[in-house]
Structure formats: C-alpha cells, structure tokens
Length: 320
Ligand code: MTE
Image 1 (cartoon, protein in one colour):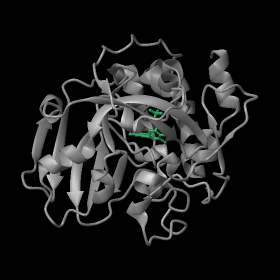
Image 2 (cartoon, rainbow, N blue to C red; image 1 turned 60 degrees about the vertical axis):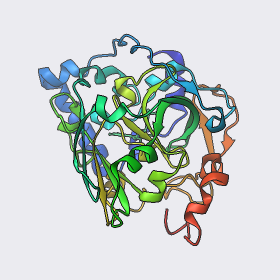
Image 3 (cartoon, protein in one colour; image 1 turned 180 degrees about the horizontal axis):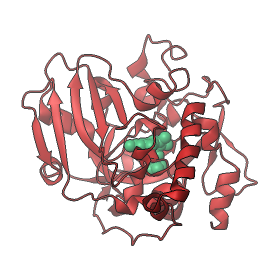
Image 4 (tube, rainbow, N blue to C red; image 1 turned 45 degrees about the vertical axis):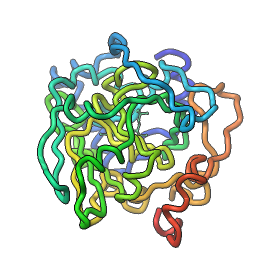
C-alpha cells in the first residue's frame, strides 16, 4: 500500500463507519471465506495495476467546468467505491480487471415511446462527447475534482421520448457475480440500483459518462457507462449501467434500501443536514496533505445557482 493511499485511508471514514452493521458483518464473513476458498483467494490478491485504458478525445466544455485543481489520475482510479468488487477503497482497482465491458448493451424500458435494447455503440453514436471538470463529494466526507468525458443524460432522455407518465428514471448496474466477487456477498441487495426524478435527469449538469482524463473509463470507475450528478452525494452516480427504466413511481435505491435513515433518495450535498453518525459541514479533498485543513461543504456541492430551483417548496431536511 503506497504512502499516499495509506494517508487517505487513515484520514477517512472506514467502511465499518459508513455501512450498516449487518453489511459490515457480512463483509467480515466474506473476507474469512476468501481465506479458504481458492477462487475467492485468487481475487483477493494485491493489485496489479491494469494498463491505462485507450485515449478518448473530447473537447472541454468550459462553461460547465470548475476551476479547482483536478485530483490526480492515480487517486481517482485507486480510491474508489464499487462494492461489487469489495468494500475497501483499493478493492475496485485490484479486482475490477475481471469485468468484461465489451460487448455491452443497455435496456431502455417503461414509459417511453419505443422500449428496446441498444448496443453501447448505438446508444452513444448520436451524442458528441465533451469533457467537464466537476466536483465530486462522497457522503463519507471526502471530495475530488474529476475531468469526466460524457454527454448530457437529458439528450438521451429526449431521444427516447418519455410519455407524460414518466416521472422518474431508474438505473441498474450489471449483475454478474462470476466477474463481480462482491455480488457473491450480501452487503448490498444486488444489482445496485439508483434513480432520479425526471427533471433531475433532464438537468444540463447531469451526465452519462464514458471516460475521464482523456481516456476511456477504467473499470473501477464504472466502465463502460456511469451516471454523474455533481450536486448529489457520489452514491447517486451508479456505475456500469445496463438498464434505464422510466416510471411513474419513485424507484428504490440501493443505499436507501440498506439504511433508509442514513441515505435518502434525493441525497443533495447539504452542509446543514448531517449524516446521523457524522457532520456533513466539512470535507477533505483527496490528495491534499494530511495536515491540510478540511474545507467547508458547499450547498449542492457548489452548484446551487444552477440546481436549487429544482427543489423549490421542498423541505430539504425532510427530503434528504
Ligand atoms: N455504483 C455501483 N454499481 N456500486 C457501488 O458500490 N458506489 C457509489 C457510486 N456508484 C457504487 C456505485 C459510491 S458510494 C460512490 S462515492 C461513487 O460511485 C464512487 O465513484 P468513484 O469510485 O469513481 O469515485
């Protein structure tokens, strides 16, 4: 474990803090099992860094990019949450190499004009890619600045022509336990699911992402297709998406199912609403020195001018 990674770890909230107790106990059982099962032991070996993914060209959208210094490639790709590959920050990089991301297809269904299944290539073809530098804030109280490559989800939604009954959009991650060892443990109900209200999905800041730092998305960051909603806690950013479903009712979401009191459906970054077990008033930028001061959490992660109007009339303490 290199030094910077260790420093990040000691200064962060551990999975035993963020995850509900039952989930944590199950993780311990998984680790114990990994010691005796040859297959699990094989996937639990230390990381062999995968080669960098192929380059991916996209021009910068300056209007939608923040000026903060981007977090390093190394930190963005080695300090991850992707519980399908384990619950430690280094697990996704160590184990996500087993995931096959080609061929890939995405099912679109529910309240839209023509439900069906797209290959990834057909889904992406009409959409020009752009680079946007966004802040990312995890509910665990750390943050990064990430140069994503993608396109507005709203452009895809328009193309799919939702009916008037489409009030929410539900997303699902791939379920493939043979390649995703964490899915053989029960710390979340698999597959990982997330959702947005339709106006949140249509907001110009909401991105479908296929790359970062001028390269295709590394597996550990959610290849080949993930969601990024920069004003919400990172857990809304569902990875490795295989299904987009339009619905009249608010869909279930993985973290809300695991701990309803701790992780709400809206999950807007809000310094005034504490997690039941820790304050959300400040955050730590990954890559900053251990001695650097924490920084104040910004309402809506600094995107309030663009998104606060989505929540007019809602009590954001109640509708966390
Ligand atoms: N998507 C899936 N399928 N599984 C996960 O465990 N973790 C979420 C989110 N998307 C997660 C996921 C959480 S808690 C965060 S903070 C972000 O992914 C982390 O994204 P990153 O690893 O690219 O920084």
